[in-house]
Length: 136
Image 1: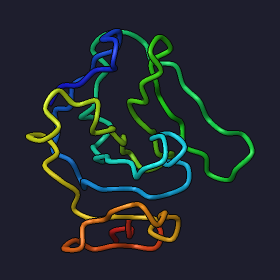
Image 2: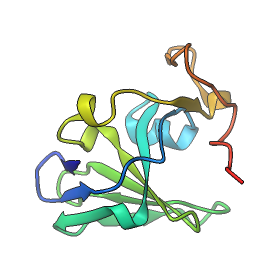
Image 3: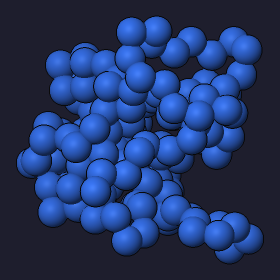
């Protein structure tokens, strides 16, 4: 799979299958998406490579276990979220060259506790009040 930011300054490649495809309704994702849920896939860090450009990063310093967000410094496109200690990169589906073919749809919806009344979640998929359940 390949993807890029809106202006094309940053490109990337995904060479491993997603661990999970999801729709996130958390409040942080609402800020980043412009108000709706965020569509993303978690891929192993080893299977994600920036192939052109260097993204800017942002990590909040005022919360526990902050995530690092990577975005294009030119057009502002949010590309990924790095999950500390998980070995996974969260790839934003809207940045894929072929979102319908590469993503297809979410396996689940998470952080439904933060969902807004106007959000739609897939009724035929699992919905979780908080994060993705950890596999043991």
